[in-house]
Picture 1 (cartoon, rainbow, N blue to C red):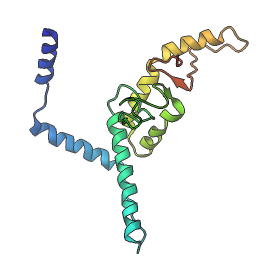
Picture 2 (cartoon, one colour):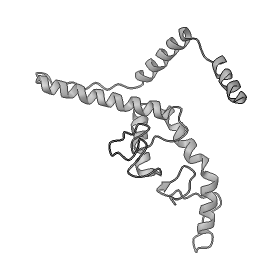
Picture 3 (spheres, one colour):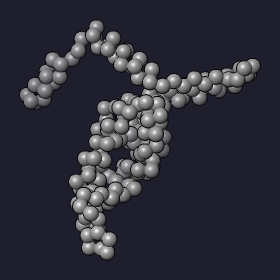
Picture 4 (cartoon, helix red, strand yellow):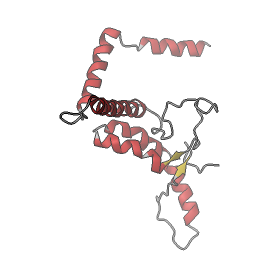
Length: 173
């Protein structure tokens, strides 16, 4: 308990006062939202329903971007495709249940990052590069072991990432 209390006291001593933190926070998000714009409106003379539908599409796009930003900017792992960080217990199987399991599927993991690049949100890419880069030594060793005894050995340093990997770079057991 003493170590924990010391750690908590250390965190508390690093807290920025609200009078300083709030303006910094607001400036940060203003810079983020200034990177790109999305403005969807109904056509000239559009019905009230069409105008409302256009606004709903725009609001959902902004919400999706916000979710990708808060999950990708300082995360330790890539944005999870099957529910991201916010999974609901709609099936009654638990609050973190994911239909496709815990693995990262590259074909799906890459999708949110395409939007991020187009919107200028390159700072969300760090978690993905760190995730796949962190498992590189393991993947290189596995690739060498897998291919060096075949008629087409892989040159040193080669890495073959499978479509589906665990958080450690291994195949799903």
